[in-house]
Amino acid sequence: MAENFVLVPGAWHGGWSWQPVASLLRAAGHQAQALTCPGLGVNDDPRGVTLADCVDAVVAAVESSAARDITLVGHSWGGYVIAGAAPRLKDRLSRLVFWSAFVPAAGRSLHDEVPPSYQQLFAQLAGASDDNVVALPLEVFQGAFMGDADLAAAALTHSLLRPQPYRTFTDEPVGGEAYRDLGIPLSYVLSTEDVALPPGEYGWARFPERIKVTPVLVPGSHESMFTRPAELADGLIQAAANG
Image 1 (cartoon, rainbow, N blue to C red):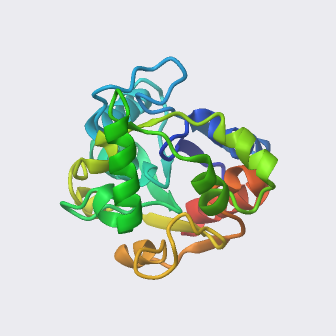
Image 2 (cartoon, rainbow, N blue to C red; image 1 turned 90 degrees about the horizontal axis):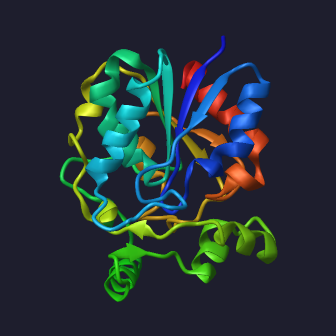
């Protein structure tokens, strides 16, 4: 069965980051549209961008299309965006898929869900910026986010990233946990070498448990859309078909 994927990227990324996976999904007979949230486009002004602005943008993009029976996919921070958009798009959605993503709990921002070391780093970087944004350091990206690529490839990918509006990390989830009560199936895809969140108390494994699903496992790091796109595309197709 052909699926209709709408792909929401994680922090620092735009729709461009989904291109390798989207191409494979289309080659397999599916539809795939990748979105870019406000503040993360190449010419966007990130000042004042909120999590609600990002949710509004995804809702507007879907509502302006004729798309139905959508599998809405969120990567990393994008889990907050798809969860916030789901109640307003419920008549168009067939499933929500979180890929190595935060699964929102009421009242808990992304800031609340990351280790204290990240909390301190993000706050420091935002405070030192002129426009309240977080620019992800190269050494963090190479080591924790894209450790399954050589340093040159990781540096090239890092050069494409945009600073993330800090408000999108500190705002509470839009709509709380309403996305769980819509009758829309939820799935989780987990990259097995993903250490962007360190394993343990703050690891990714707590999020599929939060929505009581067994994750679809795929190889690769937090950036496996670049390093293992074929396996990730297959994992998304599996999640869309049966969770």
